[in-house]
Length: 281
Image 1 (tube, one colour):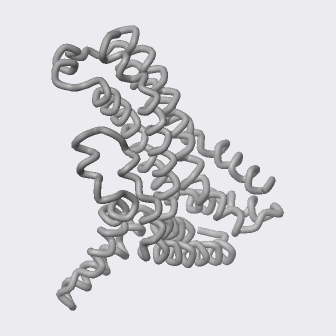
Image 2 (cartoon, rainbow, N blue to C red):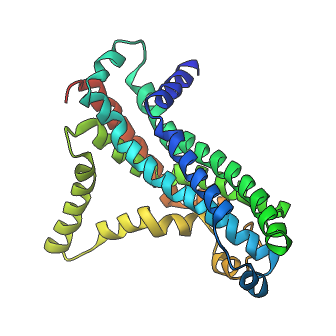
Image 3 (spheres, one colour):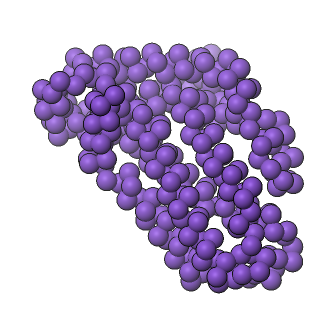
């Protein structure tokens, strides 16, 4: 356990963007809350207080979530490639730390730690913004941000997303780390090229679209179908509560979830073996 904690601390030392980027996003949102101009009358006339609070908190959380997703993807592609590029892999291999521990610590950083950092940053930012908005506008808009139920839902949806996304996108993370451990350059290109070649070859020679369908399912629609209930459209339209939206039981019962986990483990095993045998770019 101490080894993993030390390795995670190392990632914070070497990748300051992990906390700098969410701090910048929070600062920009605070500036918007302090000096932005909003037509309060049009909002209060057409929307009830609960919906106003839900909409504002969702937008703030979505801003952090989108940036977090992009940064985590870039981190996975760069984390093992950077060690080989600057030859620091030789130094780290001289320490009593296994390649397995190194790979798993970087995986945990991308799928769990970085999302938790953004989660904390989003929470602090939304609390400060709620305070600022309450002072600036007061009334219905200010009070709408202080519904305890909304804050509880915000925490629940963040934690649910962190856990389920880490599981669902494990094969994607494994593939990105495999490319990061293998490619000598242009890691982004190599991460995209093999799937695109498979998609093109299948469509040209077999006239089918299995690869494209599987990629779309894993990257986009499959997660939403597996992690959220069929009541999503109703909840979205009424803005009453997110609780009927979450479907952890259905997510864990979906075969695609565990097929993805198995593929992810296989890719991570290949990544560890590749890093074990390769020390130079």
